[in-house]
Every structure is written in structure tokens, then in C-alpha cells.
Image (tube, rainbow, N blue to C red; front, side, top):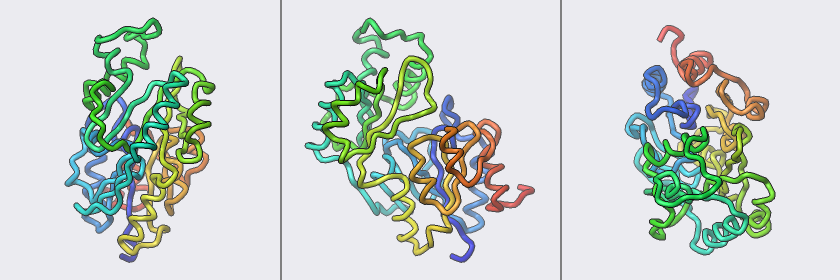
Length: 282
């Protein structure tokens, strides 16, 4: 493939502003130009395949979903690793022991402990629907179709997003499953709530890059990753070139090759130009 690259894009905060549904036109223009130049462009996201609202999959060469638990290249599934039923129950029960709120992501749907609160079906003394954090979570319910956990149908689970107030709430889960699951805790969230993800140690966004480079017979050095959050860390460490968005984690910026402009400031378009993936005059 010569100087052609595999390009990997996180979604929320990288491709799409976190408050919006669709990528900016400038980002799609950059992606079209990159593909026209012979590069391969992949989504590499923490979202499950059922949460790809705003993503027109035919505009990309493939999708890495569920933080690397599912990989598809040009219509071919090359990796698929949901949790076993035993893994899920052990993890979920330990999190509930610590009073942690869970968002359970299957391939086709997402179920949240907090969805019933947001929808007004139940109440809790600590829940304030006007708090900025819960206003953002309400977007997940309405924009991504998050359903109450009571509706979970037993489908295989790829990932668990967690919401909690204090780190000590994670102790039961750490004792039970930390050997199997990586606790990826977000350092960009402020306010009364902390968030994170429990991700199977068998995969990550980084292992997905390795698998896709092997699939195409391309050196990992010819890969470029764009991200903004802590679940992008392994992706950034694996890629030949890593680019953090200006709106991203300060720690991630310190571990990246470059920092490009904010997603709201045509960050991907400008980043693609800076790396000479596409022409400067595009």
C-alpha cells in the first residue's frame, strides 16, 4: 500500500461534538478526500454497533465498536468477543454491590440503570434531572435510544459504562473482576459524578488497530489514530501516529504525537491537512 494509511477515528468528542448527532461537514469532506486518495478510514469507538446514530457506515471502510470487542472491515466481521454470561453477571453484581450505576451495551441496544429515572418511571433522592450531568445523560436516552435496565433481554454484552460518586464504590468490582477487566476511568468529567468503562483485557481500541493492520498486511507504523478520551489511550499507544483533539484529555495529549484543533473548530479537517493525508487547499 506504500504511503497509504489506515486512519482510525473515535466518535464522541473527535468525529462528532459530544452535544451533537452528526459529524460536521468539514469532517466528512476530509474523510471523503482521504478515501479518494487511497487511505482506509475506520470508526474506532466505545459505542456498540447498535449505538452508531449519526454514522453512515458506507462512508467508512469499516467499524471498530465496543472498544475493540467487535471489528468489521469492508463488510467482513474479523473479530467478535462479547462477554460470557458468567463474566457479565460477576461484573454487574459486584458493581451493584458498590452502588454503581451501569449502562449495559449489547450489539443491538443499550440499557441503563438510570434510564427509568430520566424517563420519570422511578425516583431517587439523589437524582436531579436539571443537573447538567443528567441533562447530558438524557440525550443518550432520547438520541441513542437507551432503554431501562429492566428491559434487558439477556443478549450478549460487550461493555459496561459505569457512573459513581466515589472511587471506593468500585472496590467490590475491583476485587471480583479486575484481573479480567480493565477499569478505564474518565479524567475529563467534573461535577458530582464520575464515569468510566469496564473493558475486557482481551481487547482494546489498540488491539483492533493491530488486527486490522495485520488483516490488510500493513505495518502498524502506517496507522494514524485520532481520539480525545481515556478509552482512546491504547489506540494512541498502538498507532504509528496519534493525534489528540484540543478538547480532549490533558493526559491523552501528553501521550500523543500531535494535538489538533477542537472538534468544533474543524479539528479533523485541519488535522488531516497537517499530516498531509489530504491536500492543504481542499
